[in-house]
View (cartoon, rainbow, N blue to C red):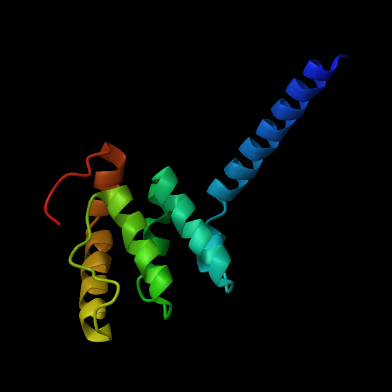
Length: 126
């Protein structure tokens, strides 16, 4: 095999490994609850990029995280997935954040999340 062939094989293998790794991360929602901050942040960002509706309940939990970075990434991912913020502001005082998290939990409990995510319709009031 010539050098060009080896380079192509290498690129194909690298792409296959990246695809496998990405698929593995996509199915592993437990990373959203990791004790390691960098793992949590990457998982939240990945869920948002992939618009993974399965992650929504975990992302709502992340809105209560002690780390402001986690809360910011979580609300950005939720907005990307659902098209909503429900008035959540990651840097707001804790009582105000708790109220907004309550709205998110009501939204989830009301079944609106499954309807929205099933239909792909992310429009509506925030």
